[in-house]
Image 1 (spheres, each protein chain N blue to C red):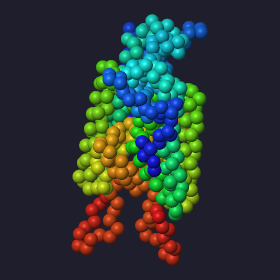
Image 2 (image 1 turned 90 degrees about the horizontal axis):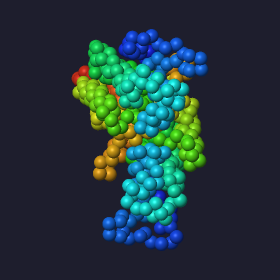
Image 3 (image 1 turned 60 degrees about the horizontal axis):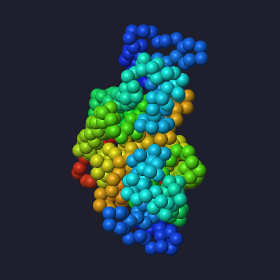
Image 4 (image 1 turned 180 degrees about the vertical axis):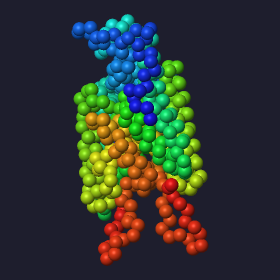
Length: 230
Length: 230
């Protein structure tokens, strides 16, 4: 899976100019660092609630300096939600290539999606708040729905292969799985770059095998088997 | 657990007057119906983004007619988040009274919390978006943290009793459980009053026992045991 910083499309230095060196007292941004600050502000104040004036104030540069990098707020949103969605679709492609049973592809997808969420947290957070007021938002929602349909298809396939407990509606399974993954955006905060794998393991352990300590397969000789559950 | 409509505190008809009968062409609100519309608007536009003018427009009544029922936006928010929090704390009290093992109290709490979320969806949705800018919001966040501490305590207790798989950090377990429950606010929409119990069953089945079809305890004679997982 591509790490966040790898997605630079080469347009960070528009018009062929190298990134402006920061002048004293004025922060120098390239397109990537400008995008990151903008996404932070959007997540704090809401995309609709953030004006170009506000962005300019927070960035400490003029509006025309922002327009040097992007055509406007809309393009910043587009870049941000694509960063999230491209990661999720890459995770889906990766999962689709896994041999074997659908439930294993599903687990792979959940694990890879957690990694995307952890690596691209502010971008996914912004994506999850998109409500569809503008053309950019509508396209983002359409891509989210496409992703959701793919997850639902994989759940249905795993169900048809007999690997998912039959007492839960597959449509609900898909919602719960990605509700769980997406809920990380509400509380997960990276601590020094690690922790993503631990979270992905915890999500998959709970979702696929449950929190209850599994009963031991064979009781060690001479020791009583501890009761699990009630 | 108290149903949503039962929480009327008797102040709906302020100043001892009975609810105003609707005049022709002017909707008549009592405090409860006014609260419900206000919460819908807050959830659509954000609490900060909703002015009293906007509320007055959406309700189709003057601002002074709103002030007949409440002291302002702040009181509407207070009533709304208390509706959600009172439900969650009632669920916690109910769970605390369950005899037996901590994991059973935890499962009871998760199930009852899903019921609160389903019954009081707009109120819980608003609560989950509170960010702490005003005194009312800060109090709501403090009560949420108190609830979270109670959940974490119950998870730790269940872990100490040996009923939670030891490979997941208890702090993460509590986050994942309530991330899962709260994620319902993103997609669950009641269909004709039913569905809450089915969702609660699905959440508990996945969270406590996992999605994977459990292997049969004893294989029927003469039939191969189907493989689960890979």
